[in-house]
Structure formats: structure tokens, C-alpha cells
Image (cartoon, rainbow, N blue to C red):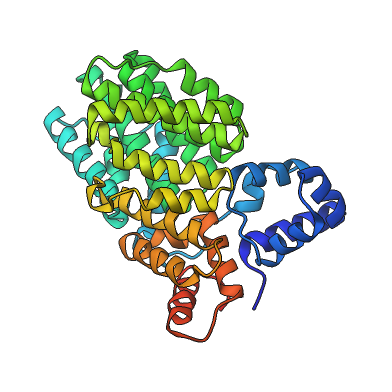
Length: 393
């Protein structure tokens, strides 16, 4: 079996830098034997903090290690739309969107269609509809038509539509950053706390992907939608959850715990909700707790949390796929849980193939499982997922 993508990238960069296993491992705070296992795919590289530590040790951007940008057009239906989305973002950034001025009711309906499809993991539909929507929203704004409402639609489209879609299909971080930057420009022009917070969420995720944890924390701390309305409380809860992930990546245990407690308290008051397509509520807080525990390397704790979450209560396919993905990721590192791990990952793949095939963490987890796969029914399922993810089988 060949070396999996992330491990191969890591080894190639280390060799190009002329650094030994011992030197890089020492700078990253791990053992040389563990680094060797990461490079061979025997251990999954699935924590942001470790990726950033290795990137710092090698003097490269984290994305150089984890890069999984789409390279084979047509492998998934949504790949065909990637360049059209890229061009729509570039034209909007140049203030030359080249769309048409559209009625507000039409723009609202089209935005709702795209964001609902993204929530439902219908990435082919999102990719097909996004370029025209982006062009027409920006063209209508440029014509000074329904300015404030169009700005709101732009913030939502670029964070919950464009940026989310690009992340889920494995497009480059820089392209997703363009979307979050356009959302930030619209939010600053709108100057409303609720939409400032939505933009801050998108900005923080763009920064997390690049290892900019301090900048992400600053962005989240500057946003304050309040808790006076159900919408505001749910968005505040999402900011708290995002801060908990940043804190886990930064190894700030106290801040991590405080942020999760705050989000949990808000969820108790809001109940299950889906304000501004965030799906915030007690069940989703549980899924985020799993992700945060995994970021901290606490796989057994993540699996324990998973047992307390009712997946039927999760508000969307997006959140359900995240639940099964994170559960499988946790089980993959626990003794005698390989079969259950594969089962959970397969459930996630059936809901959203891209979220398994294209996410660098999941490709690394699949590679680790594949390295110890048996020639049985579960092994066949695992090899099938690995093959569909483009890993050598």
C-alpha cells in the first residue's frame, strides 16, 4: 500500500527541508517514532494543534501538509461547479459581478434554496446554483437596490453557503477565505450585531484552517449578538462553540471548558433550533463537544459523549453526518472498536460522501484504519470507502 496523502505530504516536506525525524519531532513536541507513524499513515493526523505544530517545525503553512484541493474534475458531481464558483467570487471581489439586478423576493427564495441544499448535503445543487446567485446578489447591491436586505443575504450566502460548500467539497482554504472576506465586507457595511456575528463565525473558521488561533479568538471575542432574542442566543451559542474549538487547538483548557459550559447553558434555554441555518441546540452542542474532545486528543471522552447524543434530534443531514463522522473518528483510536468505527464512518459517508472523501482528517483516519484492515466484511466496507476517497487500496 502506498503512503496516504497527508503522511506523504508531511514526509516530502520534511525531506525537502533536509530535517531528520528527530529534529522535526522534537520541535513539534512528539516522539520520532510517532512522527514516523504519522508519515506512514499508521497514525491519523487529525488534530489542528498537531498539524500547526508540525507546520511550524517545518516552516510551512498548515495547508501545505493537509492540502486536499479538488484535483480530479467530475469525481463528484459538485466538482463540475468549482471553477464557476471560483470565477463568481473573483468577479465579486473585483466589483465586476456581471450578473443581473434581481427582485428582492426572488433573491430571498434563491438564497433559501441554496442554504437549504447546503444544510441537506445536496452539494451538486449548491454548486450549480451558487455562481448565479453570487453574481446577482452583488450586481443588485452595486445597483443600490434593497441595500440592507441584500447585504444580509450576502452575509448568509457567503458564510453558510459558499464558504461551507467549499470546505465540504475539499476546495482550497484560500478560496474559502475569499468567501468569508466578502461576507465580512457585507457585514461591516450592514453594521448589525447579528450579522457581524455570522461573519465572525466564518472569519474564525477561515483562520482556524490556517492555524491562526489567536486571530480567530480575537474575531470571535469582538462579535456580540447578545441573547435578547432566540436568534441572537443561538448565534451567541455558536460563537461559544467555535471558541471552545479554538481553545482546544490552543491547549487552553480553562477557556475551552468555560466556552462549552456557556454554550450548554444557552442551549438549555433555546432548545433545538435552526436560526440562520446554524442548527444550534442541545444535540448540536453534543456533537461539538465530541469535536472539541477529539481536537484535545481525548478519543475515549468523545466516544462517551457520543453515547449521550440522540442523533434523531439533530436538525439536519449536515449535523447528522458530523455526528457519525466524529463518532467514527473517536472509535478508530480505541481498542477493539474498528468494526464500530467503520460502521459509523460508513453512515456518515452515505449521508455526505464529500465530508468523508475530501476532509483531510477523515482521509488520515481511513488510512490508519486501512493499515490494519482485515479481509472480512468490515474490511471490504473500509476498503470501499478508502477507494472512493482516492486512497491507495
